[in-house]
Amino acid sequence: MGRAPLNPLVVLGATGSIGRQTLEVADHLGTPIRALAANRASDALFDAAAAHPEAMVCIADPGEGQERFESAFGRRAHFGPGAVTEAAAIGGSTVVNGIVGAAGLRASLSALYAGNRLALANKESLVAGGPLMLAALAEGEGELVPVDSEHSAIWQCLIGEPPESVARLILTASGGPFRGLSIDELEHVTVAEALDHPTWSMGQRISIDSATLMNKAFEVIEAHYLFNVAYDDIDVVVHPQSIVHSFVEFMDGIVKAEVGFPDMRKPIQYAIDQPSRRQGSNERFIISGVTLTFEEPDNEAFPCLQLGYAAGRMGGTAAAVLNAADEVAVAEFLAGRIRFVDIAKVVASVLESHSPIDPQSVEDIAGADSEARIRASEVSAKL
Ligand code: NAD
Ligand code: MG
Image (cartoon, rainbow, N blue to C red; front, side, top):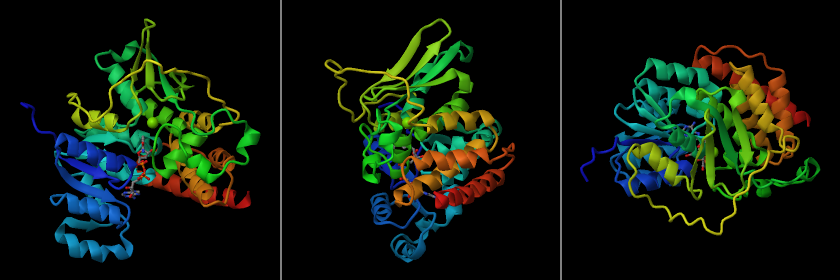
């Protein structure tokens, strides 16, 4: 079609929700896959590796599954967290980072220092390591593009606009499965109810974070670093239909938005294919009969959003601590050891006792992260 072939893809978190949809999009666009990475030696990864015979296969924590991969895939199988970081550094690639959690940060930095295009779904890279990510962008030849739907929307609204013309970013939030419930009603919600997201189908951690609004807190921090906008100029509005993916308000009062039915394959395709806009696999946009509503977030019932602003404004390692405490609290909730409303209590308590430093290296982030995890486990155990 007269278009230069796309960079081959390195798909990190290939067995997850983002990873699987990335492989679908790559298949649709005919994009070659250079490497696949996941945490464990699962059947899902095995099948993906078998379906992509050219791809390197990297497993962070293979355990006993290592032998099976070695005997099936020989020299194209690689093991340990270092293998994932190295895959991200294969030159001339677009690296889609769909790893969940702060574990994704090293691979993101590796992709940027190697001069690759980093299509970032792993928002924790920016939440935990924002200052390091900006340094990697400034020092390397890499390019950072968002996959998260809200940030993809803002990115698209900003194309062709001078940075000083931006007055405000307004991120939309679905409000999650518990929108409208009071603090008292939230005391009794179950894990299954929390995982049942009304508009998006996602991995467990982000589903719980969407129910607490911590996901939106992370997205505020993500937007701050991606678009260099002050926290005072980033707002959140609850929009249960998830059709407006975010707004940008300009100095002259003009407001732009990107809209569409929720489907992560669209922002994934845009991140890989931009500036091209080839035919996607999406349904047609038929908006007649659809009602769109917008409301203020309920900060009393969902305190995590304000915790995110507080951590963002503290700066340094504070947001890394916010994320690490939340990773632990969410795992404790999923295991049935703490209640839904305790997640915010654990995170608030860990954040309060943290004195942020300016991180100079990934080790500084890792140090703050592991201290926060220990503290979060202690706080959870006492609840
Ligand atoms: P998921 O739980 O479905 O998948 C996570 C993937 O990460 C799995 O493939 C897992 O094997 C891999 N992984 C975990 N630890 C790893 C490690 N140490 N090294 C290598 N791989 C590792 O999660 P998801 O819903 O796909 O979300 C992934 C990321 O994308 C998260 O940061 C999430 O916030 C973000 N995101 C997801 C969506 C969505 O619709 N799912 C939307 C926007 C942003
Ligand atoms: Mg999002």
